[in-house]
View 1 (tube, helix red, strand yellow):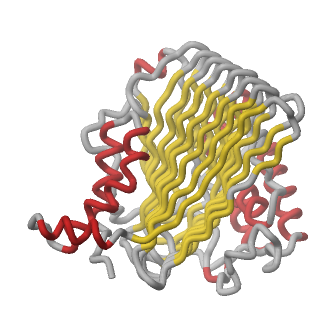
View 2 (view 1 turned 120 degrees about the horizontal axis):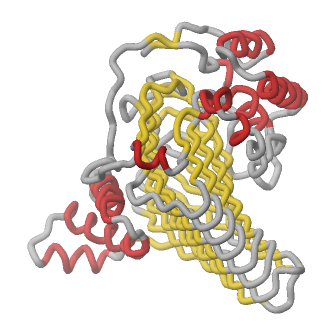
View 3 (view 1 turned 180 degrees about the vertical axis):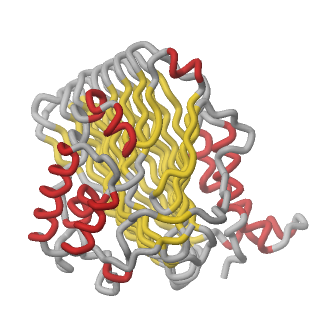
Amino acid sequence: MTTTSTLTFDAAGFEAFLASRKDEPQWLTDLRRESFSHADAMDWPARRSEEWIRTDIRTFQINKFAPPVEATAGDVPAVHQLRDGVEPGGVLETYDSQVISESLDEELAAKGVIFGSLERLCREQPDKVRPFLYTVVDPDYDKFAALHAAFWSGGQFLYVPRGVVIEKPIYLGSTLSDGGTDTAHTWIVLEDGAEATVLHECNSANPEAAGLHMGAVELIQKPGSHLRYVNVQEWGHKTYHFAHQQANIDRDSQLQWTIAAMGSGLSKVNQSVDMVGAGANCQVNGVMFTEGRQHLAYHTQQYHRAPNCHSDFLYKSAQQDKSRTVWRGMIKVDKVAQKTDGYQRNDNLVLSNHSRADSIPGLEIEADDVRCTHGSTTAKVDEEQIFYARCRGFTQKEATRMIVSGFFQQIFDRITIESVRDALAAAIARQVREYE
């Protein structure tokens, strides 16, 4: 598949993008125009602002990338890390933000489950889409969010009705060509008592591919629902990755959100879980593994808006070569959110003398009856561990791989899906080189 457009993200490119949307409903076009006008009036993030001071985007030139307009079909590389040993109940795959395949088990469709291209469902089922779209992610958060709201294409939508339990995982696959653009919007809505597992992987055509991902994830959980959402990001090492990801979980709902970030050249991701109903419970597991000159910045927030909620965020990062990770976490507690139990932790394993890990945990608490804790550690591989492993016949690389795998084991133990545990362990193991 090759994109024929040479347009950019300016006014002319926006009009060409709108012209490529076939039979798009007027309400959606109006939303796009409003978002583009806001984006056009915004500046790029300020270099000295607290949120961006550790992530330098001065080399980023958006005019090198084209909006995702109509593309012509060709050979599409199949990269399926999360599908091994999994029989999905639904599949949706995109290439350069264009939907290339979608399917849903007839049994699930008969139960009222809606799954497929967000673009298509905006036309076919606006009553299910329009009430929820952009009720979680703020399209005016910054210029990246506003441009995404104007230019999103393809997209994935899963709607699970009240009380419906999806036994088989739903699979989402996003692939980028070398130089391609992905602006997909991932949107999941679970009604009261519904349950689902979603596996979502993002890959480039080859590990060194350039590209641009400017996306968003919105997760909405009504009372008593249960969602397991897994996202593996392995964009090419010359790809820019900007995303806003947010979940709103209501009373007595449960969310397990696993993120693995091993790709892209530069990433800046904002991830937030808002607990808006009493008794909501969330667990977030984050894995970052970097090499070369990669720069991955993940800013997380666990926002307690209601009482008696529990949040548990654990991020583990390992850095090789001259790479760098930035993790900035915040537990935010409103005045009404009494009996809050919040925990956040970030551990870093620095694998070279030239890599770097920035870890900034934070608390913003307005309630007075809470239990909130946070922590951060940064260390190198213990050379004594390497020595003892080699004394038992392991090579330097084998010893390092075991130590790195052991470092991430706490995350793996929290993941309840065996195939995901195996895929993440294999992805990390194949990237580990000898410790310098």
